Length: 68
Image 1 (cartoon, rainbow, N blue to C red):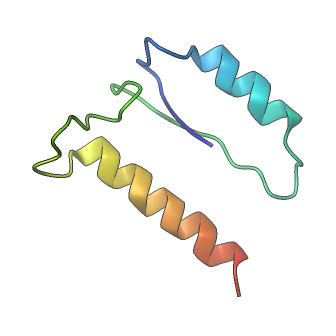
Image 2 (tube, rainbow, N blue to C red):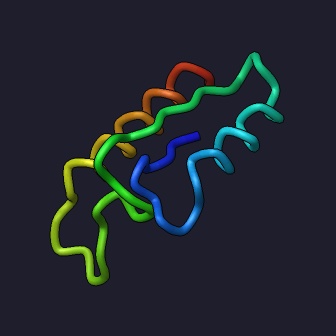
C-alpha cells in the first residue's frame, strides 16, 4: 500500500487501518512525505512527477519480488 502523507482526501490513519487488516506475509506500507492523494499527478498528465515515479518504482519492485 502506498499513501501520500499530505493526502487531504484519505487520512493516513485510514490507510494504516486498512494495512493492518492485510495478510502480514504480503503487505508493505510506504507513506510518501510531501505528497497528496494523486502523488503530484494532474490531468492531463504531461510528465511524471517525482512522487508518482516513486509510486511506479515501488509497485514494480513489489510485483517483481512476488510474481514468477
